[in-house]
Length: 325
Ligand code: AQP
View 1 (cartoon, rainbow, N blue to C red):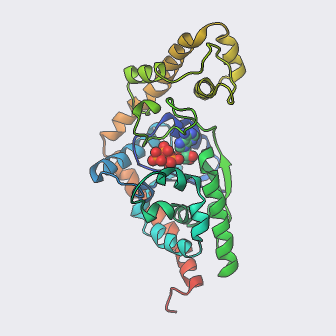
View 2: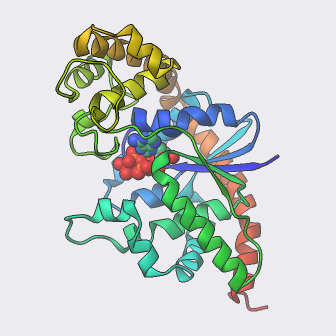
View 3: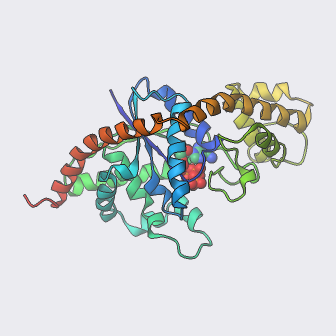
């Protein structure tokens, strides 16, 4: 069975961008692949995090993985920092990375722009991501469209290591899952859980009132036509994408349904649809979050991942000469 690895940062409560762009698809994939789903807390600390909040976000993320339907008998759910091999291999991957190629990463440019004191970790995020993936002999990495560039770099680094030292790493294929969901307040910007403007995203745990308010105050384009046209009507096109992914209805049939009805009716229905999709997930989430089940699953996940990661870590260390014998 082919192997899948994918990670999500516990850098806030997941948004519907994370859900529609990644997590929702994991549930289907687990039937056909051996899956490792990682809570990448070491990636999250590349920007400052409150330690207590970070701990809480990790438990929340584990509970959400389960609440959307991941079956822990089929998938391994674990926390990155509980498997030291990630950081160990990440150092080796940093040593085969070039500063220039890391500086060219869009995410690095976006997250460092205009900031004083950008962490070195933000720059070396991609070699850590490469290590996460390569450690498990991953065949396929399912991610949202925003991660394409990082995945290309992972393949470059694996190939470089294989040529320079020993042919031990599988070059993973990228599986782009969903379209990129944009901020509700700025359709030129990706919807992100760490956006300081909370009106820009819908969190998977937002209540009905908040969801309705955020959708009603989402920016729209100048006319009243509910029409998909990314270039000229990026804001309404983003809302149409969200509607289509939540309802599994074609965009063209949604356009037809709202012809002549204006933005108000469309937004109202989108809010209702979002609430109806998130409510059952939230119900299951709170049951899990308040139980011991989450910690038991994470303990078991960490055992499995540690056992699996050891083999490739040792091979990489031997190849680079980090072993005495
Ligand atoms: N807006 C999005 N649209 C589609 N897919 C998205 N993903 C994230 N945002 C969108 C996908 O979700 C998975 C987990 O992402 P992540 O949390 O590891 O990192 P990220 O891409 O940096 O997500 P955020 O929400 O923007 O986090 P912060 O604010 O901390 O940087 C990935 O598969 C990603 O493609």
